[in-house]
Length: 158
Ligand SMILES: NC(=O)c1ccc[n+]([C@@H]2O[C@H](COP(=O)([O-])OP(=O)(O)OC[C@H]3O[C@@H](n4cnc5c(N)ncnc54)[C@H](OP(=O)(O)O)[C@@H]3O)[C@@H](O)[C@H]2O)c1
Image (tube, rainbow, N blue to C red; front, side, top):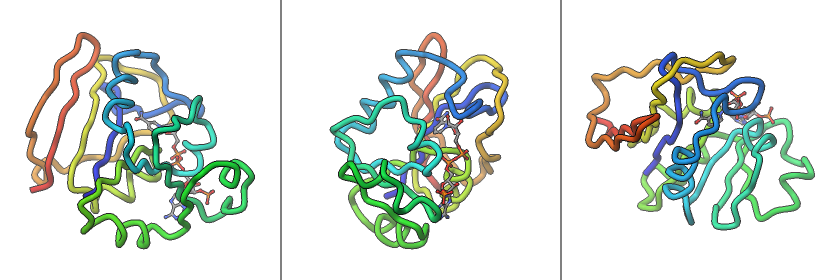
């Protein structure tokens, strides 16, 4: 099972200057609750800029150019340099893989993901990376959780 989890603004922004453009405590709580004790995959760029690494994550990092980087060696991190290997390992697996970004990673995993969990923030933001265009005919909306500043939409691939 491969689940993409992301937060996007109304105008589809994911990030700006390697950070989230917003600070929304409840949205972060939703992300941390959803990924607690789970396999979480990050692109190297997102991983390098994470403000905090949670001990309860089983971390997987995708990189071609930084396989030997010190930040990947210090911790208990699984490193892949080939996206197909990741897909082979998790697509048919009953263990969920949470794909946690960034933009380059979402673009490549969208066609392989079986589930999406998207927090849509009710505001426009300035950004430099965007969530890829969704073809809604491929996705069935199965649940919405409403919050004051954002809604979490759960989709299943049709
Ligand atoms: N709003 C959200 O939910 C959310 C979530 C996550 C991140 N973000 C934002 O997204 C931005 C970062 O996204 P990004 O697109 O710049 O970077 P990214 O997707 O995090 O990482 C890109 C890097 O991942 C590695 N990579 C990508 N595809 C690969 C492949 N097929 N095989 C091997 N390695 C591969 C490469 O690393 P190497 O160059 O090391 O080979 C590539 O440079 C930040 O602004 C961050 O805040 C937002």
